[in-house]
Length: 333
Image 1: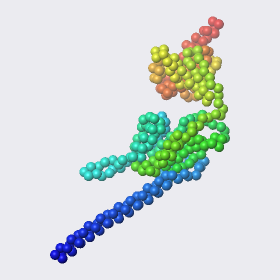
Image 2: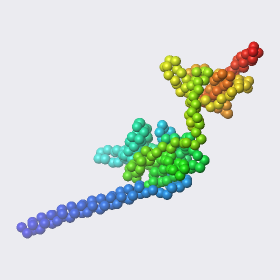
Image 3: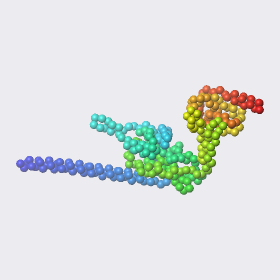
Image 4: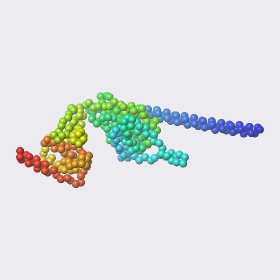
């Protein structure tokens, strides 16, 4: 009997030791994970000093802008590249590793802009300009659409461990958020590395409106039935009445106006089919750019057209009859 009792006691002690060892291992794992999470959380809340030049993460410095495909969307610009997918092994199957960070980034942008956004899983960089700003040519830079006072300038600040950068536009010692640049080394980053509350506050920051060198608002009706408006920033918009829909359709702003028509201007006019309007239009080339040309009350006005700006292999016929017609009118008068 004593031998059986000893075996039972040994089995019970062994079971107790295994449970104790498992509890200790779990406790150590939990403590290590908590320390790691706390370290990441503290680093994500760190505000670096403000600088005069933008900073880039080390991994981005090893790449050039040509290494990424630029995708300009309605509210922001993203840079994507090829990214090897990561796998997780499950019993009897393989599954792609979840990209929760990019999912949360999509949700954040959709809530902010109140629109559906298209963000691929291979996105490495988000360039989000504020209202009245646009993304610059370099990573982390932004440009004011309407300019600013001569003494205005930009400042930059990194947030966290080189994952979020804010660009400020300083006017009269007041900082306005010009844009936010968010860096992703890969789509498998942990969302705790990005301060969502900070991003929300930055996206809701006050909007900068330029009050320097404002112009007078103007609106005029042209002789060809076009309505032209000029706002206080000097931006020109043209509208033409559409008889079928009974509404004003916006046109591209006219870039150049000539008050007096010269014979040289008439010689440069050509006829072409506009793929955008699907009709015959008059084309003139100015500074190497093909423009639509409109004759409006003894002057020619030009405006850009995306389809007609493309180079044409076959030169269209010259608009010589305009010159002849003008000469005939001058002769009769």
